[in-house]
Amino acid sequence: MMTRDECFAVLHELRRHDVVVITTMSAAAPWARLSDSSLNFASVSSAMAHAADFAMGIALARPERQVWVLNGDGSLLMSLGTLVTICQTPPPNLVHFVLENNTYEVTGNQLIPGAGKAAMVQFAHGAGFPQVHEFQCAETMSRELPAILERAGPAFVNLRMAPGREPAPSLDRPLSDCAREFRQALEKQGS
Image (cartoon, rainbow, N blue to C red; front, top):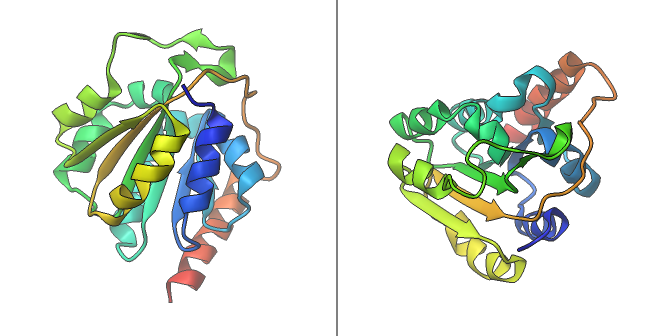
């Protein structure tokens, strides 16, 4: 099973400069340490379970860009209906990555409901995702993910990884400032 650092190293290497990346909870700080792109947006705090909703909106509004969401398995469970919504109006430029470690990591690694029993890929299949993939090895992910990213989506990519010890994310400035800067980056780089 891979670590988050191994997984994120592969994603960082494969990310093109114009890809939008929406992160949440335990993904926010580690991704920010790797990438300082103005096209990153940390959907944290009260938006915990809504990173995928937000990413879908960005993907629909900016069809010329690929949009990735780095979602936690706990966050996904809190908003499973989003999977169905994504497939109802499927943005071909959306890649929904789920970081499956079976815990609510940022609140102390409590087990999520269905830990070790619920299959994230089955939720995605049931919702109607045209592409559903799963990786638990960074080497295999590095080899196979480039072809997946070239195909039209939406794609659901489950990334099975060991639990980490990431503390709850915090913003170093108001969320409204972060949102304004993100919007400006989308506008500037989209023209």
